[in-house]
Image (cartoon, rainbow, N blue to C red; front, side, top):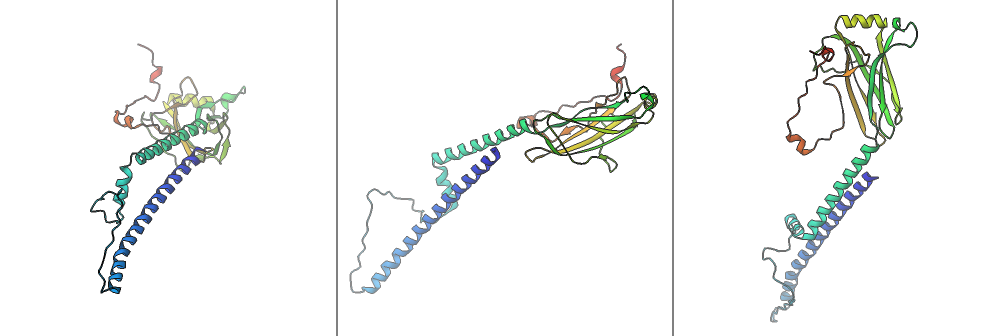
Length: 289
């Protein structure tokens, strides 16, 4: 609704400007034609009455004032702009229209951000089957996504990959390949979750212990694309790692995480960028000295 009001205001302002511009052009053209016809009429009268004394009758309005001698009735855009901006009422009207359009735009963005869908990765972990012999069964990776918004997310497509690596660098950045797992488009309602199940370890607990002994790290990364109820496209990127410590959950990596949302202000560009250097591994599990 706010977007329609903004478009209507822009169209109305454009129509008013075109009408005013066209009216000024039409009036200037008529004044020029009237001035061109006066010498022709005087010349024809003189030719028809050669023996008569030529007389010139000048009707002057006592209320008129002398104009600019350079103003010969010709139309120029610069003259129209100069006259328009010399009028305080015109300038105030234009400023008011700009302020109203800015407020309408900000209001529309604020309303959309409050109501749109926000699809984020809530958790990712290795899941042990809840059966007596679950240690010997396959441990899948469950990536749980949730719509934290107030409206449904449409055309949701998940892309994800995982792999085992040995001592990956903390600033590793991964990209999706043709071997990524891709889901079919779906719709996720507000405050609902979707669990993406990926292959993990065949011999669950034994493989887990072996990966920990070899100092392995399981990397999980991907992207989810979706559309909100206003028709705008959004995405969420994630990159996580599991170092096979005491918990089965994945933790976020330094790089590879983000969304399409941008909230930078002009003053933020003047500030120096903070450099964050997190560690990837089990440094946080060392004993306190």
